[in-house]
Image (tube, rainbow, N blue to C red; front, side, top):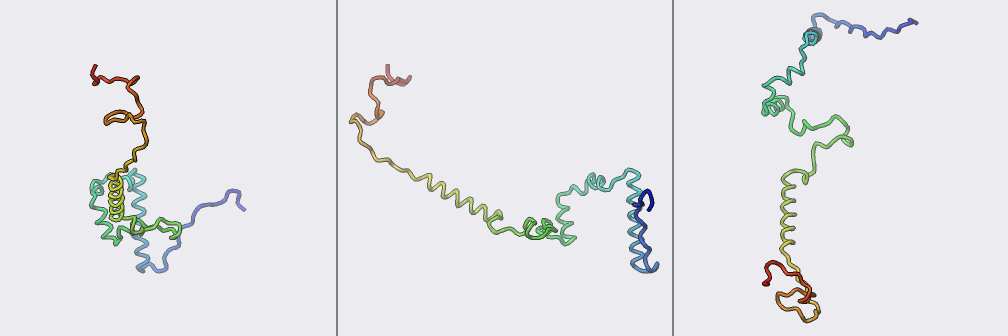
Length: 151
């Protein structure tokens, strides 16, 4: 056993045939990765260049790219998790805005209809001193006068 373990990753094996299509694809991919690593050593970062690109700030670009890639709006919210764990892509009908606005309109209409109802309270037995415009339960003496009372 060596005193220091060797954790280096060995090189990938060469492709079977040097003239095959697979070998050409591998060479092209390797060349792209080498170019990205070379740019990274120079301090150029791909994600930073994408973030600073003014053409990618166009709000209509995302729907066009999704259409080009064949990704629907619902698929863009899909998850790779199992269905019992993931957030559902398809919601119930009453979760969409049209149904919610109808429910809110019905609820508001019901609230307004209930508000218009006026419940009257039956007159109870009083001390007989209730005249129109008088305050029930209050005698003439001891009442506070307002600035509108005649002096």
